[in-house]
Image (cartoon, helix red, strand yellow):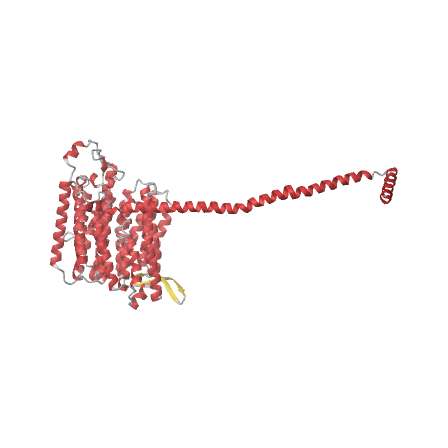
Length: 634
């Protein structure tokens, strides 16, 4: 119980403490590093616990006649995820000490990281779908803050908004699925659902899968992930290798026992399409982080395929190995970018190369293999794992999935997977050879010789990359099937194994040819332009944004006219009231004042008759009597 409390509360306490001590940089860094190291030790210690599974309740309430239990539970499955998350987070935290040391908002950066680790840990340990959804949304919120960390960059804020809104589309389906589970089973507790051995109706299962489509960047909601590379590179390593995007795979693995065979087949094809398009879109990019982002999409597709064909162990195994070598690739890319920021590329005739994102452009990374040999050595190891070269971790895990696809007799799906394997070896080898080979002689003559800044790789960078390199090499040899209760496919097809090796070799050969003889540039045709322009998704989003803005402006204009109309209607009684007030003030009051004036004047005249002299009164009486007599006489 104490371990669970530490895992849940320590990141939150660190987040609050760092926010309160932002001005004390050294204290903040010590808190952040200490937090993640403690979390790593605690998560590893859970592996050696005595109870294979345990549930810790903390909140219960009733909805109608059904009881909802919010609790955290520990089993081999989520301990597996916790170890991955905290080990990679440790490397990212340590790497960030150097990468972010000159950033004025480094305290806020580490505060966000601690909060992210806390929400992700709570999501993994949650035992209830509704509880998972709550922390699922919190993970999305913190990822929004991390992707848009550099607020002064418009591209970063736009990418954060795109990621947040795109994930909300999938999350609507996820919420509908949770409500459907409640209606179907009167509970959302995973332990109760497992004990009942239920199979969800198709629509409920697919609605839950919509959450996976959004969070794990599956087709057609995959386009947010490459844009999310606008955040700091260590954030990309954390979010897009082992945590945020892995949350979708975690959910899919949790709900897979409740899904119908028909839905699992559809899920497998979703993964196949995602793996194919992710690989295809990566082969003709120049931005190294964008290549790695599309690579992540493709590899997540392979994991979804594994779940769809019933190879949950293979999907989990590939998630494990992929987390280490993909995080390592991102950190290596971060070192390359860090180097180019300190040593900007020389100016030459290829002016189009040097954009604001010049440090991420592969064309500016030529010959970095000799300038950063340590980084390039591990970059080569991670690349080999991503391709799936023999005896690497990626080879074991990816081959496990492909063998299950082969034995499941999904011929079309297998064909897409084979092509995806070719794309993977092609874009990785193209990326590797572009960094390995130096500039052409013609370019070198045109470059101006400038003194190169001395760049020394820090210990934090070396440790993070080296540690991930060791984990990437060893992860494929760890015997997980007996530990986590899964079994490897019994009969491997050596024909498929040989075919994969040949496909990988052809992809590497083609990548070498493109870089050596074509400078990494593919033929300018419609198909390659689709890859380069990312199926014109940016144009579509721009067009959609313009339509959306036009609609907003149109509605705004209608609202203004409606407000003006309502204002005029509202002003009519006011105008009428002013007219009546004027009539009352000048006409009615004038008449009253006139009669008052007349009465006053008459009163003043009659008042003069009463002067107190007797002879005047006698004169008045005589005149009145004469007048009466005259009137009667007449």
